[in-house]
Image (tube, rainbow, N blue to C red):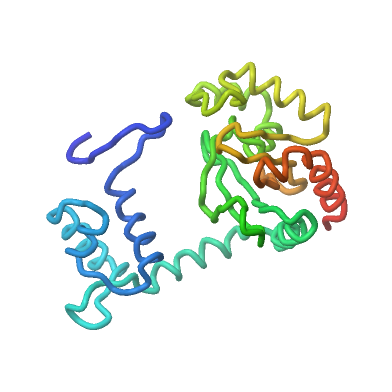
Length: 253
């Protein structure tokens, strides 16, 4: 491994230096003002020496700059330029953005569009409910692909052989009594969803959340849409929310 510090989380190998570089960007997204390397180290609880080296590296590559000279570093527009280029190359279709907004208006609950990322489902678009008590989520959040309705709506679009290969990488943690804790249990949930016409969840991964999900049709990308909210509002509404989602999906063009 050399000098890289690597650890395993849910069977995913994480390179700490790469994770730290991304965490710095997330740090500035919350801070929204320049920070010195010493402030970054203190706020994130990192060793000063490695923080100074990482900041110097990012600055030398043009990803950080000093807007006021010795007044601290701030991310340069280079991040945005690269992100926009990547997004333009394979954008999320506008019809799916519109679908998410329409489903929030129709159900009053948070809606997310998900895509597969190994053993996880990653939110590539999120529209939050306006209700005070709601599911808080943001683009880039990840959830276990086997333990959520959003994830299983992605699994259902994969050939059985591909799912079997993926199951061998999944850490079947039982997050709650309702979590499917084996490949066989996940397959049973997929069979149940096929019979119903939609995928459902009930506190499987996140406490006090219930929701439904459906695959998004068309194209060569695997995507799903999930509607989720507090159990107190959504558990009994799941058939209703599924019907609303199916109706809106039938109108997609």
